[in-house]
Length: 230
Image (cartoon, rainbow, N blue to C red):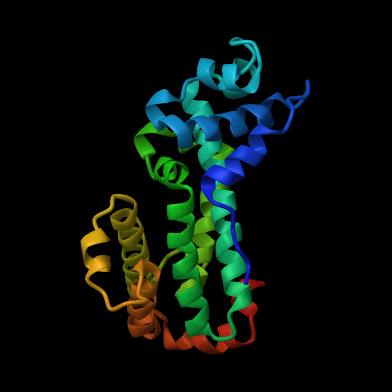
């Protein structure tokens, strides 16, 4: 079984990497993620990230312009990491229904491993949604969600009503579950579960009960040959 590092462990490993001249952008993003995990979005400024990265306070402006640029590029990092997790989960499952369940778990696991980053990714008022890197990263993650429910993958194309309904239903389910878990709102319910059950086991029950209803019948044959994930 693959054991993923916790957010704190992963960020500690990143913090051990020395800052090299010429790699300021990457160093700033790594520093920003550490601050976000440690202090929340309120503690994340250009100056704070520069100080954390060991750079001059003026240097980051060449890469990010302002704190909105930094937050937007950090959110893009999150969306790319998120999409990779969903892709890994889909590849490890053997059936369309299994892929949907696996990706639902991956969604919630990502959110609970990187709660600060996850919440930043959906804080539209703090992000520049026209920034090319962020738009591309968001589109990649959206494509994974569309593929999971067998909906058309063109982000700007016409989406049939039933496809839109499946996307929103699946998204609302896992996103809502993730937010409830991050906020501790599931704790009382989880404590009342039978012995051996935890929040993720409860999520499995929910996904297995409704997963088949979130997929279109036309998409199953395409999923069976793997073409939806090409």
